[in-house]
Amino acid sequence: MDFRVLAGLVLTSAAAFGAVREWGLDQTRPILEKTLLLRLAPELDALSPAERRALDALLAAGPPLQRIFERQLHRQALDAHRALLARKPPREDLLILYRLWQGPIATTLDNEREPFLAVDPIVPGKNVYPWGIDKARLESFMEEHDELKDDILNGRTVVRDASEVPADLASLAARPGLAALHPGLESRIRAGAAGFYAIPYALAYADELDEAGARLLEAASAIRAEDGDLADYLENRRRDFLTNDYESGDASWIMGSFGNLNAQIGSFETYDDELLGVKSFMSHSVMVRDAERTRTLRAALRGIQSIEDALPYESHRRVRETIPVGVYNVVADFGQARGTNTASILPNEPRITRKYGRTILLRHNIMTHPDLFAISQATWTAAVVAEHANDLGSEGNFYRTLWHEIGHYLGPDRDRGGRDLGVALQENADLFEEMKSDLVSLFAAQALRASGDFDEARLKDVYAAGILRVLQKNQPRRGQPYQTMQLMQMNYFLEGGLLQLDSGSGRLKIQYARYPAVVGSMLEKVLAIQAAGDKGAADAFIDRYDTWTEELHERLAGSMRATERYRYRLVKYQALGE
Ligand SMILES: [Zn+2]
Image 1: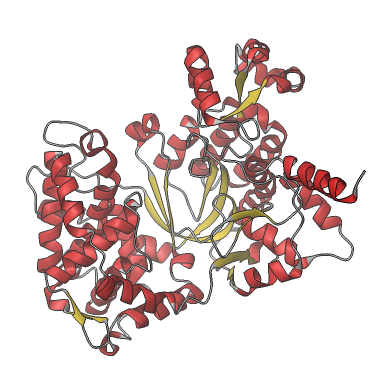
Image 2: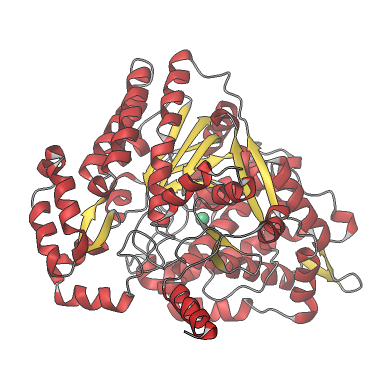
């Protein structure tokens, strides 16, 4: 055979199998240079000896849950990681990248996703569907098999194809306890020989869930005498792992009153499922309460009804004064929760939140981390005129975010016709809900100043954070609700004179005295659209305020982008010996 033909064949077959070569140092170096390393080391002195033992057990539950997450992301993740760990000499750079992305797929500086190890390229359904499955094929299968639809769309099942039936049957046969909790599962798996079927995470990840579950029970028994509510939650969550239904654990998580420890345990968020957007990915966050800040917050919450009553709209609702909210410091995060999340507001399932509400966990040591604050400060300095350079305070964004989360509990939750706002405002519902909460936070800041809960410096910090919030480094796409509503606020603030463009420098001046009037007037419009459930008015409001101009927005964005030193953030945890 001619050499060129052979070379062509090799190339073709390599492409057909999606073969990828691992990255060299020339490819990893630019990424590492753009990576900020953060370390979390919260104070643990306030914990009792029993809490320390429970904390150790909760941390020990992390690695098996981490493995579930990595398995969910990529079918070769764990094998590739094992091979990498065994390499001699080690490739530290690749190990860091694996840690950064929790798997073998990188996001490049051009925002492309590529394998950096010799594995298959990414697929939208990740490893919670048959690898590389076509969306249309799965949807047409569901149309023909209506009886399997609920199972396939369930947020905590893995979808399989016929080839996996024998292995799943064997795995179920080895676990009679699970078979008893999931009547009919065996016959559904057998029926899967005809096409597709779904198995609960309880079976798909049984080994890892057993290992993590055992640690949760250890933590529960360590803490039982001192913190019965936490012990109940941990025991319920362990059972949830078996039943594949989180209601009992979620109810005791939201309603329970815990001591110094809290943990977000399980799979909740679905944004890693790029095929159907329904599968939840595993997370585990272990946190210690910031007692002082939680106490201050609870005190301020006693005035919550008067803030609701002062909002510029009719028909005020009764607000529960025991919103389950606390201020925490992250000890360690695993799986999908790993990174720089500033708050957890969970759970998401409507059938559960309707009955029990949601719990809010503010992550103080992330929101106020000095290295992240330095990044905000650089952005700020690039966007405002020199006289405002020192306006940003390290706690401003924490209090702004805190009252944003509480803001979700205030204002209309239905329109005047009794319709759910999601139904009434459709694809604009999230944007309006988030914009309302942003504005309620700034509105509440005045009320909290008046009641003495905020001093003058804190009010000023929150106001500056409210401006930082609306600065955009890139023009938002209409499909991005957060960025779009932030841009709308910026434009409204400009129109109302709270912000002014200094045309010489292209930067912003802030008229703090205009804050109450401008925020109050925008909030009034947002609440009116929500209360009326008026989709047309919502569209018109967005169209009017989402403008982006070269002279103002793009120029400002460019000067903020020029300060960008880091693209990626890698978080390490002292409690894990890192
Ligand atoms: Zn929100």
